[in-house]
Image (tube, rainbow, N blue to C red; front, side, top):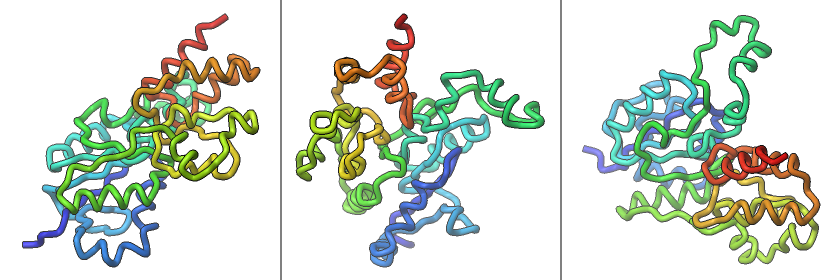
Length: 259
């Protein structure tokens, strides 16, 4: 019997960008495959093997009734379930539809909208099943993904960053783009793990890792006001890839209620 870690990789409504990060570990894969068995990975192997699985990574948001059935099945067959990427953890970019009427979208996008079967909202998988770990990002950072898998292989309970992107900027010696350039940035309220990718190129973080622990996004929104941003600008900043996270959603609703 194989002693390898049996992994399932499942795709829901998404672009497959986070799944591709497994393949982007091309330098590490030969060694990794000595210890890991990708038993279910349809993008790579058209003959998946059934569970049980030691770990299941799920990319994508839940947008159909069928996807609810899929994730419940894998939850029952897996020791641990990992929400992989912004779509799986917060509903993703497609959760922007949650702020509007899905029937309007269907009417203007599809010639036969009555054929489209979808939930009214794009939602994270934790709304339907127990999730053991969350790896945010759009896509997930491949170094963070590799670090997580190595912790599983080591038999330890994985730990992930809970601090904000600001800490990563400080460690890398990156000047704060808010202070030095007056650029709005969600780094102070966004979970670390991306290596401060966007600030490294002189642009503001747009929050794809999701909210950090213990943050105060309303205070950051107030700082944006002090910088001269309008209510509409602030809403647009928070209404992005992870807008359906509880913390960012509260900011958006607060500003939308303003006159």
